[in-house]
Amino acid sequence: MATGAGKKAKKQSDEVNIRQFEPRFMRISVLTAALQELTPREVRDPDPDRAVEEWLEFARDLNADYIELSAALHPTESDIPAEAMLDPVANTLDLRRPIDSRRANRILAAMKRCGIGLSDIAYFDNMLHEDGAIRRKKHEFMLRVMDSAKMLGVDAVCGFVGRNQALDLDQNLDDFRRSFVPLLKAAKDRGLVYRVEQCPMPGWTTGDNFHNNIGYAPGVWIALHRIAEKAGVGDQFRIHYDPSHAVLMGQDTRSIFQYLKDNGYAFLIGGFHVKGQVVNSKGVAAWGYGGQTVLRGDRKDGKPAADPRDQSRAWLKQVVLCEHELPGTARHDPLAYLQNRTVDWLDHQLAARELLDLSADRTYLVVEHEYPPARIQDRNRLLPVLKGSIAFVREIDRAAACMYALQHEVLAAQGIPVQGIGREAYRS
Image 1 (spheres, rainbow, N blue to C red):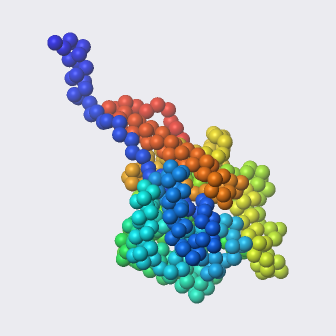
Image 2 (image 1 turned 90 degrees about the vertical axis):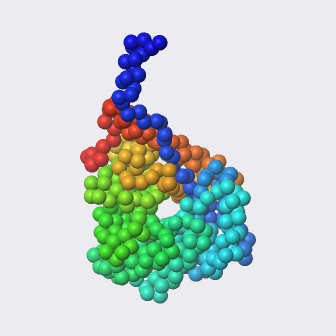
Image 3 (image 1 turned 180 degrees about the vertical axis):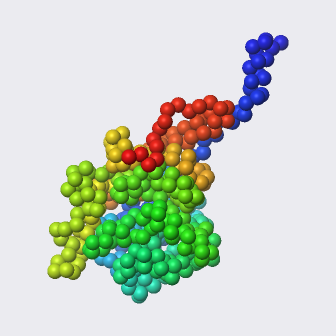
């Protein structure tokens, strides 16, 4: 027989809404550019899909769940010499020949054999290049990327918008309408989403422009989405958010997400790169957030330097003040978080759940490795480094998922207040 106290407790339990603890974790992926020469060029050039197979095996060893497959123009076809790139892109997916059913089936069989999925296919290039012939070449390659995504069963491609260097930024909005919207229509025809990464790409040109990818910040994302929406392809335009680029521009994740929510665009972010940026305060003191403006050595006599290796010094606009972080490799620094000089990964994952309109368990967290001292092109040396970072990303996301479920679902359902204040958006 129940006691009086027991009956009272049961009645109280019946009167409150009890929500079970059910955290939802994001999907952990890794960009294959993390190890560009996993398969030596002399092996993969004659047998291109071998590179994808070996990366799937490597991803299994890393304990990743998915890969983001990097595609790029082959070095023999690129308009930019590899020596001029600070961070050469990887053509893990070699599309000198368009993908066909035989190649697709080989890759799908390797995915099944390794137990590794495909989050999306990434091709990072300037889709608004001012040279018409070069632009057409890049667009044709992006269409091959889209065809590959469809044949491999993924629903998104990832890349840049770019910038037409012959036009100012307002004119680039018109160029986006004329030239980029057709790519979004091509994505729609194939049932795909085009997710834009927001890196401003300051080192893409030896000129003084810092913003060379016009999709670099929320204000522009909204302007571009409105153009896409008017053309009937708003659902195809989404953002692949990378916090390292926000840090580069003095922004913080929570404020960006809050801004999107405040303006009715919490739906706009569809995926994440997890790559940090650690700002060097001395570099900021010397040059500010615009980076090194003179004496870089990337230009001579008013023209780009003749030696492509010197042209890569255009990236001093960025690297003089900061360095990319592979998640987990930078020291825990709460003061740096407060000053937006690096990424607070736990708050990053909490803010995504609290402020964005997304389904966490269907969202990809893609580890992107660009921490220079650890960019080791040796499988055995890189394996424990990258494996540790992926484990860190997984556990941070699990912690954030548990905090969110406990605070915003379990406690909220029972009317129990959450303690403290936490990080706040728009804080000066």
